[in-house]
Amino acid sequence: MEGEAIVVRVPGGPTLEARLESVSAPRGGFVVCHPHPLYGGDMDNPVMIRAAEVTQAAGYAILRFNFRGAGASDGVHDKGRGEQDDVRAAMATLASRLPARSPVGVIGYSFGAWTAARATRPGDAALGLIAPPIGMFDFAFLPPADGRVLLVAGTRDTYCPVEALHRLAESTRAEERIIEGADHFFFGKLYPLGEAIGAWVTDLPRQP
Image (cartoon, rainbow, N blue to C red; front, side, top):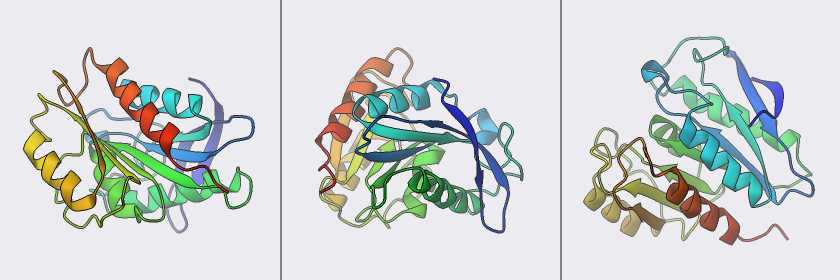
């Protein structure tokens, strides 16, 4: 995916490298948040590309960006604190490129899932959490969202144990998808991951 190279300006913070993939007559948009930048995560991660492709195919504009300190983005890594501002700024930037009152959701992978969840209110924005690192970070703050949250992970993901994902899905009333045989990186499992994400975004209610 190439898209249009744009910048996201974080109020009082850094300027972020980003790419915008547009569609005609968009249903809305999704910001896509990459995994941990200190371990090689960036907006061109294969999981990010797969999530963006299927979401765009479902009729949504996509904004991928690099967190502060990653790629060509300014600033330095802030352990998930400043990165929440990055997510909110990316959402505002995407909203400014869409028709008025278009819904803007967030899809995050691993560290990006935790940061996206902290930066948004799932009742207001659709939230897709790919391999949320439940074994490392606390996700108990998530409120019930009745299908506006997707939780998807593999059966071999040591950072996101399946039983912990089940409990989180029950407490949040999230849609849960388990990818058989997938590890945290979805090696060899990008196709079923995309199928799960695509089904969820397709089923989200259309904007009146």
